[in-house]
Amino acid sequence: MKNIILFVLTISIVACSNNKADLTVIGNVKGLKKGTIYLKKIQDTAMVTLDSILISGTPEFVLETNLEEPEVLYLVLDKNDTDEGRIRFFANKGITEINTTLKNFAFDANIVGSREQTLLQEHNDMALKYNNKKLDIIKENFDALKDNDSIKAMETNLQQESLLKSKYLYTINFALNHKTSRVSPYLALTEIMDARLKYLDTIYRSLPDSIASSKYGKELKILIEEISDSEDN
Image 1 (cartoon, rainbow, N blue to C red):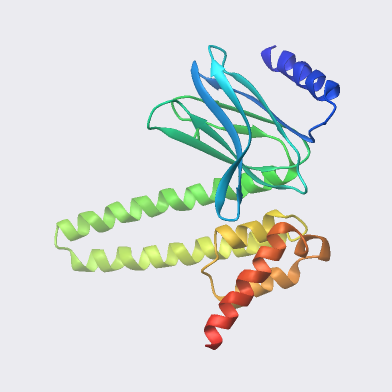
Image 2: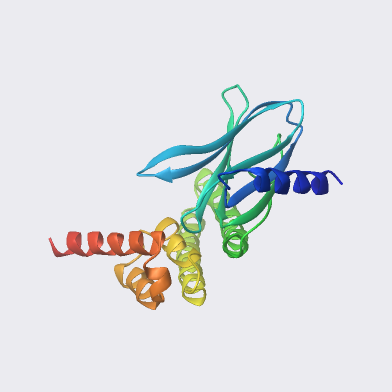
C-alpha cells in the first residue's frame, strides 16, 4: 500500500512541475531513520550529485533528474557517520523503484526499472556466483599453503586462472548476445577493460550505430584506440 501511495505522490509531483524530470527514483530504506540519500553519476572521473533528500523519520524517498540517454547512476546513502553505501543501477527515462535495508544497503537492493537494469542484474547475478567461487578457491589455496601442500596450492592457482578466463568469456558472450543494448559496451568498459584488445574490438564492431554512438559506445571506442596506440609504441 505504501508503494502505491508513494507512486501516486511521485506522479503528482512530476505532473505539477514546470521543469519536468524524465527520471524519477522512488523507494524505501528499511530501518533508516536519519541520513541523506543522494542520486549521483560519474562525470569526468568525478562523482557529481544530481538530486538529494534528507531522511528524518520516514524511510521513503523520491529523487528526480533528467537523462540525455540511458546511463548508470548511483544511489548513495550518507548516514551521518563513517559508513556510506552505494547502489549502482542502469537508469532510463520513467520510474525506477529501489527498495533496500539500512543494514545491508547495497547487498539487499531490489531494483525495478529499465530494460537495461534487468540485463545488468542478470549479468551481476552470474558475476556474483563467479566471485563466490573465487573466494572458495582462495580459501582452499590459503589452507594448502598453511599445510605446506604445494601440489594443492598449485592446483588452486590453476583453478583461479581457469575461473577468471571463464568469467571473462561469460561477459564477452553476454555483451555480444546483447549488442543492441547500452549494457553491452558498459560491461566491456567496467568488467573486462583489461581483456585482450581483439575481444574489446569484437564487441565494439558488433554494436549497431545507435549503441556505438551512445555514451558507453564512444568510451569503448576511445579505450580501444588508447590500448591500440600503447601496443604500437
